[in-house]
Amino acid sequence: MHEFWSRGYHATPLAHLLRATKLSRGSLYAAFGNKHALFVRALDRYISDALARLDTELDPHGPAFAGVRTCLAGYVERTSGAKGRRGCLLVATAMELAGQDTDVEQRVRGFFKTMETRLAAALARAQAAGELAEGLEPATAARVLVCMAEGLRVVGKLAPERVITQATVDALLDRFAR
Image (cartoon, rainbow, N blue to C red):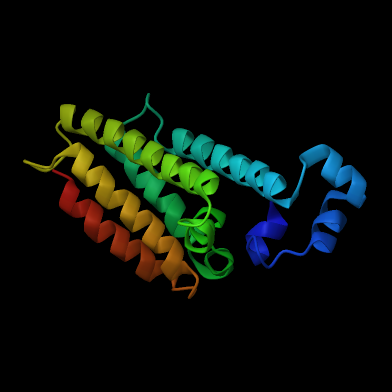
């Protein structure tokens, strides 16, 4: 996963994958079939890890809007400094392969939709608790948050200062809060 994350799918040579997996060429092909299948497995793991983190941050048993703030704070952390420069495997994959690889495109699309759905559920809970601004539609707000979070990943490649990224997130979330 880290090899593809660092270089992208097309720029990751087989030699690097062999070294990273500590497998011979024959064993790698026997275990995964081909480079694309290995990449899909790595992408699936990345998505699984990201969704587990999202579930933890949006803790359905905790205060709903605080969970949304925690989720976005995680994005601030992951998009600042050296972590930001590394970028996001999912966003990089969307840019490199979406439109060319339907298997990968479905996975990326599925992740964004799942993220949106989970954020919308948290925002609906926040709305029920009276924490959202009047007239804010949870599904629409969730779409905005997904776009913002993934946009932070793109801008993070330029390693913005954490304080600036946090201020941007706070400005949006303050508009959502009651």
